[in-house]
Amino acid sequence: MATAATSSHSLHLTVITPAKAVLDTEAASIVVPAYDGELGVMPGHADMLALLGAGVLRLTTAAGTTQRVAIRGGFLQVNHNKVTVLTPESIAQQDLKADVLQAERQKLDAEKPTKLEEREAQENKRVWLTAREKTLQPAGHSGH
Image 1 (cartoon, rainbow, N blue to C red):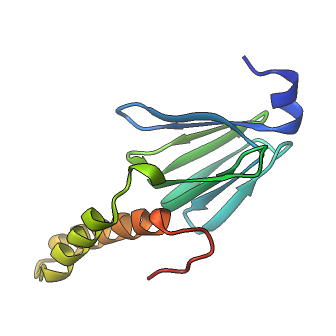
Image 2 (image 1 turned 30 degrees about the horizontal axis):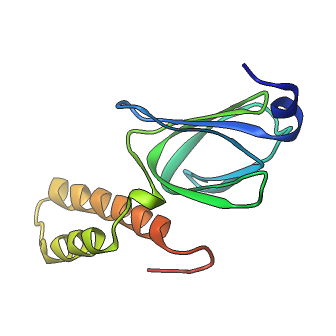
């Protein structure tokens, strides 16, 4: 249950995939990749729903540290300083490995799909890979 501090000075963030709750924590602020750009949420934000795109969810703790989590689209709900992200897939920065992502990028770059469905599937894989690569990068680094 939310405490008085949670309801007025911080946000409670939960990131949920079909497999598990990935993150359940307090945050001073949150930035998510909305479908059409980034969306910031701070304590006291109006209740809302938003469609998310693939990208990096960044949360700042009360201590000022930043955590990064890759999300693969989904939905965001803000309700009385409780922020819920429902996403089909998510992975935290510390669980990503640069060599694995690099190998995946090389494999994707080598594929030459000819059918429309194959090209669309490849583009979806590329968007998710780029989101994870950006999540792995240190803050302030621009990347691809």
